[in-house]
Image 1: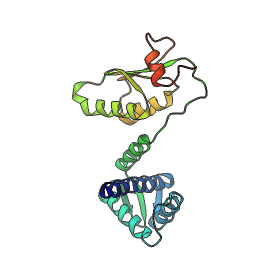
Image 2: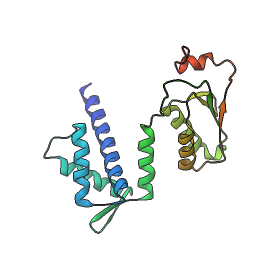
Image 3: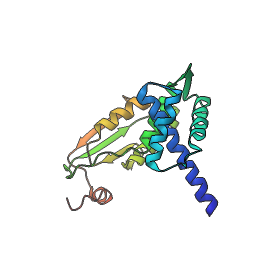
Image 4: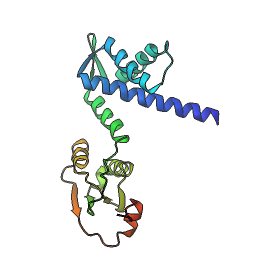
Length: 190
C-alpha cells in the first residue's frame, strides 16, 4: 500500500510542477531560463512541495522533459511555450476547472447538445469526459445538462476543440421530469 501512495504522490507532484512551469512561461510570454526556477520555486514553496536543495535540479529536469516533449522551446537564454505547450496547459487547467456556482439557482437549465461525427470519435469522447469532469449531467449520449450559467465555458470549449457548429447551447425554463436532475444537483430545496 505504501508504494501506491508514493507513486500517486509523485504523479501528483509531477502534474503540479508541469502546470506551474507551463503557467509561468505562459504568463510571461518568453521567460529567461534563470527566471523560471524562482517563479516555480515560489509557487512550490506556497504548496509546500519540495525540500530545499533538490528544487533547482527537479525544476531543471522537468523543464528539460517539457522541452523534449515539445511543450517548451529554448530560444538562446529564454524558454517559450509552443502551441503544443499552450494546448497542454489548457488541458491541465480544464482538468481542475470549476464553474462558478451562484448563491441561488435561477430555475433555468443549461442544455448542451452536440453532434460530432463518428470519424471524430476521439474528439467526441474528449468532449464527454470534459463535460463530466466539470459537473454536467448526461441525459442522453450527446445531451448534457447543467443548472448554472456556463456560456463562457462552452465558448472556450468550442474554441479549444474547434467544434463551433457541432455544439448547441440552450437555456431551458422547463424540463420534463427534472426531479432526478434537481436531486443530482442538490436543488430540491430551492
